[in-house]
Length: 224
Length: 224
DNA sequence: TCAAAAGTGTTAGCATTACACCCATGC
DNA sequence: GCATGGGTGTAATGCTAACACTTTTGA
Image (tube, protein in one colour):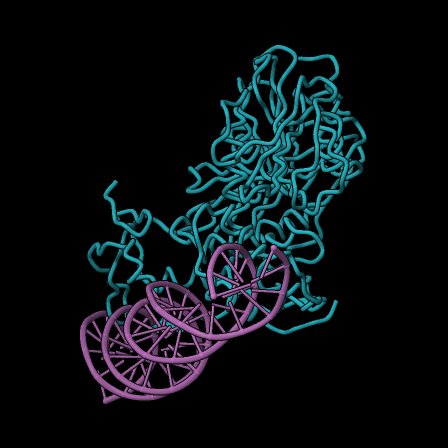
């Protein structure tokens, strides 16, 4: 380590989303220690010396909340580094966006956390530090990835119905979509393969789909 | 500073672009010291303890290359943090995208740099560390901001002609655009105000424009 | 047979693309 | 009057948005 490297602490924070009861939920922990003791915050903590940033994000998420299943998506969001954002000293936090599949897996307060719970991401409680602006940033990113990418699929299990997929969109965007236009749009996109059907008690059975093995690349289709 | 903060060094690197001779140029420095002595690299260095990340980026840019004028645009790109990306130890670099106005201002090698120069951003020399992938990342970002934003204006001086604006697009995207469609697109967007005309020796004088004081917000126009 | 959920097409407006000639100026 | 660079319009095509009824099943 060069001697002129300043004493700046490096942390990761995680914005973990899932869909539950037709709502976009974010996973928060209740702090046990000062500062902001008792306040809700994003799970996170310091990066270890030989640990990739993404590994640190997953480790902190697991340690503090006990989520056990593999995330379907993990990407870096932004580095928040204003001096003064943490009263303990200069701490730069590299924030991450995580998507967990459908169903809000059980969580509990782990190391350093008094509790952990899922909250409506569009109506969060008061958050510690600058975590409210981190959450806003994450909401913008997830919206972008829905509209210009395939992120919606990461909220769902391996097979799913079109009404379920539409629910993901509606929960994230918090607005209703037209069913016919929605189906047209996702089906003509070509990234879904039929995968049988599902009877669900009452009502007409729904067609199941899974992500296509075909991948669109420069307007051409390629099998991967 | 909490005692459990690991010894991870925090740096910034800067990808500074401008347009010169109808090309997108990137500003590089030639390293004076090991590792990668003599190799070309992005300007950058360590963050000081009480320094905001963006200030550190501008300071390093100025110190190492001597650019004097104010950048028109500065945004954070991405935090690169793979262990092993720098042989001196664990160093996480928060990279930044900078846009300087038209004309490739004079540069020289400053502190720690043997030389500084502008290169074609689409055909860079071999770069030190993981700077080639940082540059790729920056190119994707700048393309995105051209197509879905107003970043093209930041490459130009206060007033400019439509052919100049089109040159910015063509240099960044490295492809030719149709003049009539281009003009229609940028003019109907409504973010340009006429600002006189320019005679340039031979040829028909060009209409000058400047950025509009009107700002489009949710499809409504608002004066800001 | 009724309630619940899934499924289905058409039209109008708007944006995008392709394409070739005239205009104003300096020399 | 010619070379240089700036400016202009239209038609075809594709995408988006609005809109209401039918089908299949279980109880």
